[in-house]
Image (cartoon, rainbow, N blue to C red; front, side, top):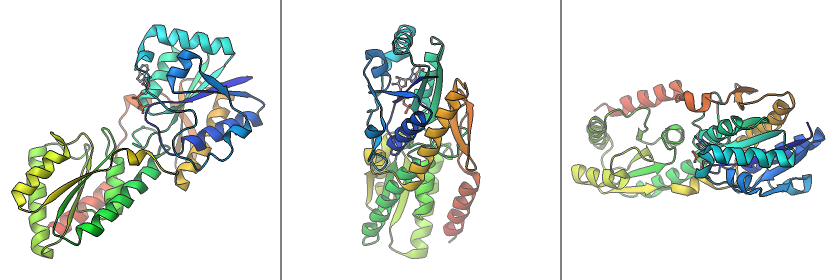
Amino acid sequence: MRKIALLTSGGDAPGMNACIRSIVLTSLRFGLEVYGYRHGYNGLLQQEYLTLRAKKVENIIQRGGTILHSARCHEFKSDEAAKIAAKNLDTLGIEALLVIGGDGSFRGAAHLAKHWEGQVIGLPGTIDNDIYGTDATIGYFTAIETALDSIDKVRDTADAFERLFLVEVMGRQAGFIALSAAVASASDQILVPELVKNTDDELENILAHIEAVKKRKGASSYIVVITENLWPGGVTHLSEILSKKTNIECRPVILGHVQRGGSPVSQDRLLATKLGAYAVEAALAGENRVMVVERNQKVATAPIELAWQQQKPLDPYLVKIQQEFFDLLNRP
Ligand code: ADP
């Protein structure tokens, strides 16, 4: 193998730059030429790329975002687009393409593989942590820290008044950030898609808990951490319902895109560095249609389609503790 390429795709995540750096340095160590496509799959279609040398990845390990710019590319789902991408890769003589992104980006890689002879390898980069088969994804740890920092600050102001706060965190259809940030901030209530089956029942549950906490502690703050897209009508609607039903002022706090930004924390830099290096080694070993993962501190590869065929469960022990604490504090 002489030439390898990479791109970052989908929602960006802190640690993607650390991953790019690791891929470039490992490739150079093995004497490979490395190309970086810009703007996700768009760059592949437009032949928009740059040669990545060691100098290009100096001083980026601590930077959020991605020097290659991430993007969505809806047209890439067509067969024609994948054929154009395959031709462009062949023109440059690329033998393996490494894709840093979430499960959507991995689907894109598998789609390309149907039309291209080269190898495709996915690297899980998403703050949502919703990729089956790996303990964590690049960006997840930083997103928890960002959410946690905000929730701690909300609590400082919440404690000054009797107020309810609904803090909405990212996660698309997964509650990893919400669960971790809620447990680490000792929030009062957590609403995540994996655990909320019926929102009417859940509303009764929250109201009863607020009442129990009020009886026990008197006037105090109450913080609910909730995943985006979960409540019908959104968190603003839920906060109106709670204000009305409890007669306590309820404020929604939507953290939004700040969770994607910031300098990556050490765990994300280390994970990104390990997975980046291992992806290059896997490419050299001839692996194809796989993603690189880390389980119990060991790097490995797994079939790429697991990313969308299997749903990753929340940590059952963390869920159990959270529910036991919740029940304990729910007693009159
Ligand atoms: P993420 O990688 O963060 O899950 P998306 O779901 O938005 O983000 O996917 C990122 C990009 O991956 C899309 O804009 C598209 O270019 C590509 N992609 C997603 N799904 C497919 C698919 N089924 N076939 C081909 N390409 C896809």
